[in-house]
Image (cartoon, rainbow, N blue to C red; front, side, top):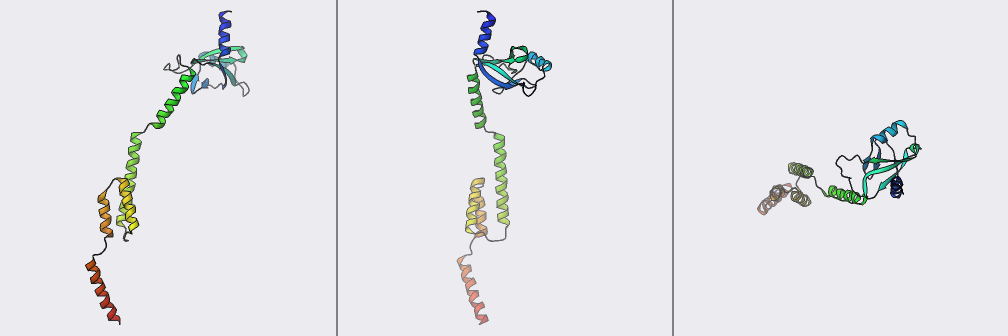
Length: 193
């Protein structure tokens, strides 16, 4: 068996897939593959909707290149990955998929500290506005409103100080004042009789 036959056999035994030829080459597993030879092919043989789909062959043990079957040339063209960092050199498809999965999990689990700080400041400002609006209102607060403000204070981390302000506004009159008011009430009622 000649060296060309061995290479042809190795290509045929690789994983087959179908991809669309674009002006940037081929995309496979979020990696781009292109070369000068493939660019020259695109210029020489403009593609139609029927011919733009190409069969590619992928070596599962090394995704640093793919083979593309070109009908007009009646053969395969070796096309390297355009990754400038040599990430794919000697990398298997299985390793690449595992790395992509771990990368997605890291991105999903990562927390943007600046974004979290901004969100916290926005929430604090909104709570402060709500408290100021509540305190400047002219109506007496009901017990449920006090509870709501206490919950807001707990969330905003403003603590006991804002609850004391609320208690001042919702304070009930002293019993001695109530007795005086009731005595006045009796005098007023007698005046009308």
